[in-house]
Image (cartoon, rainbow, N blue to C red; front, side, top):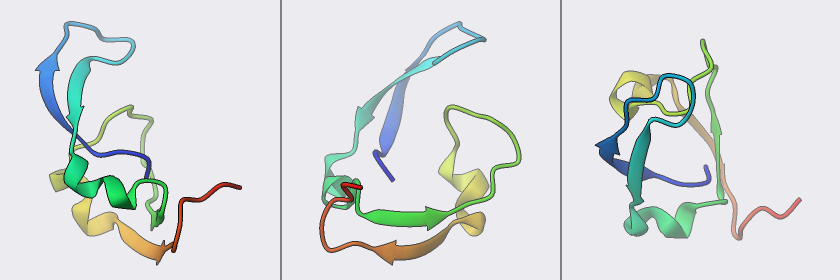
Length: 68
């Protein structure tokens, strides 16, 4: 997991990043430390948590940020 953002603005773009988001700082201590398993069924740039929550598996919480 590298970041978690709340979408604050959508753009009329169909091929590329179509949103602007604010990083949720209360989760910042986990960025780069949580290893999550998830089998993607398509190639999105953004996913809604509510639609995939039951498919996420937290495999490991690293003691420090992954560097390798």
